Amino acid sequence: MKEQNLLNITQIAEFYGIHRNTVMKRIRQEGIEPTDKVGNANRYDIAEVEHLFYESEIRNLQPGYSPEDLPPKDRKDWYQSENERLKFELACSELIPAKEVRQESIKLMKTLVAFFESLPDKMERTRLFTPDQLDLLENQCDQFRNQLHMTLQQQLAGTCTPQRLTNS
Image (cartoon, rainbow, N blue to C red):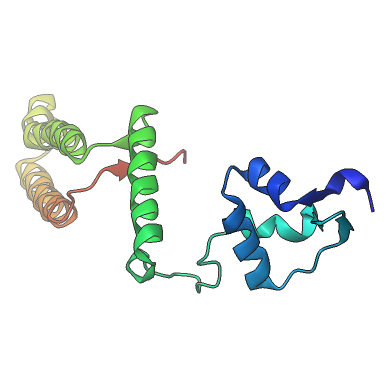
């Protein structure tokens, strides 16, 4: 056993920046026995005790847990970390605010609708289509526009959160 891996309670507390009593309490709760003793100071192998100070007290939660199931302090920490993550992603342009998504979608839809509204007129000017073909083209454009409108209404009806960008 390397001598440098053995630390007493005071050294462990200083290393992790917590109070000695907290270190003793956690070691006692876990039932970890000292590896060595120098004078009156029990010394512990850092590899045996480090998990006590890195892992959350909620390490036994099942996958897919809800933050609402957490103890108050952990729940507060979770929400605080999520807010910080969202701020960071927004600053790094990994998130787009919902308002901006709607504005860009409106521009895109206006461009598409304008194209499909003018398509039958443009095709009529080329004189390559018969009147029946132009009517069929106009009906198809109208159906597509209506389908596009309904799809857009369904997708934007419930969005009020930022949208995540994907690199696909």
